[in-house]
Amino acid sequence: MEAGEERFPKQSPIPENSPDTEVALFRIRDRDSGDNGRMACFIQDDLPFLLKQSAENFYTLVTNGALDRETKAEYNVTIIVTDLGTPSLKTEHNITVLVSDVNDNAPAFTQTSYTLFVRENNSPALHIGSVSATDRDAGANAQVTYSLLPPQDPQLPLASLVSINADNGQLFALRALDYEALRVLEFGVGAVDRGSPALSSRALVRVLVLDANDNSPFVLYPLQNGSAPCTELVPRAAEPGYLVSKVVAVDGDSGQNAWLSYQLLKATEPGLFSVWAHNGEVRTARLLSERDAAKHRLLVLVKDNGEPPLSASVTLHVLLVDGFSQPYLPLPEAAADAAQADPLTVYLVIALASVSSLFLFSVLAFVAVRLRQRNRGASLGGCSVPEGYFPGHLVDVSGTGTLSQSYQYEVCLTGDSGNEFKFLKPIFPNIQGQNLGSKSE
Image (tube, rainbow, N blue to C red; front, top):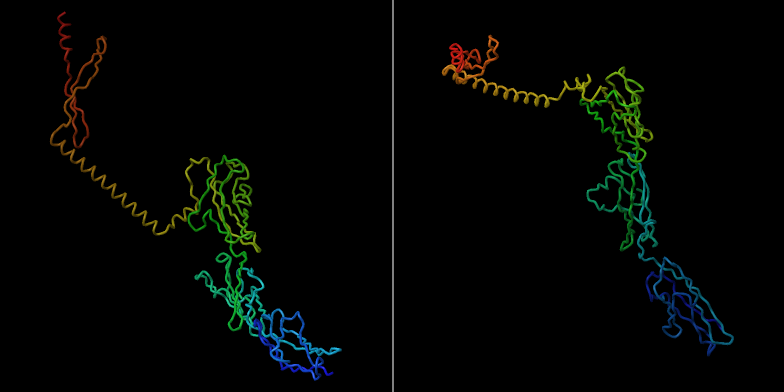
């Protein structure tokens, strides 16, 4: 008995995701006769393929469902042919089935979101990180290109801040970033393959700008803008620890770069004042005495905790007074600065003086007119005050006591001598009668 024969054409790759696709067509033959020439053909049961008999001794190998190249790209199928003779003879033939790729997988990022860090004031074209996406397909279907996606905020100039390498996903900051202006930069990146049709995916990138100590402390109080310095008044009776003033400062940085400390650098009289390091409070360090100078100047240093630290200085003026009712004595520097007032202030002072002078002149003119009218009335009409009686007192030289008598006065208002009292004559309404009676007795 001769073994069966098979004829198999050369196989072409089978596209994945193609169910019920013909893989191979072949014919079998046995030269024996009877049962010895009758044949049976089959394959392994664990393969996604089927054998279909199309005619006598002709079979077709087809796919049983869709193949997935990403799961298995190659299959070895063994075709087994046996006859029905005794003893049975068999023949085996192997077919290698290649599964070709179809663009059925989109690129997948290694992370759904990326967090990158860059220190502010970075140099341009600095590499700040990378994104990566892979595609399970093959060939051009697996080639990935990266790009920046349009930001949600149309006002964000993303294209001028960062760029991405289309081939490898590396991200280069295009310019120096400022932590105080932009602390977090969020944008999307896309990955697209070169299949047809192309498939794509996206990921979120968050760039955190790290703070650098690039801001010096800024003093809010006392103001150091070139105007007249503010002078703090301290009573000489103040106890040690008396709060003289407080230096208030801020720092535009964050974290330890914004932690501030205060230090007294210079003082007119060392040991008289102290500055608390953590809050900037200026307090008296001991009791004050009459021997202490009235005017003091303190230089306070404000320093942050950055590396390297940055600092600013502020000058305080302190005036010792016996009491707060004592008038304020300006320092010589304040007087000099006041003399150099800006032109607007000078114009305002001149305008105020002019208005005040005009008002005073108007009042004086009104008073003068009223006085002239009154003088003219006095010269024409004589005394403007009617006659009147004013009580007077006479002392009796005879020792009998004080006698109440009346005198007649005339009050006149003259133009050149002011008010005058003219004595006219005494009036004795009852004295004459009493005197006559006494004489008759």
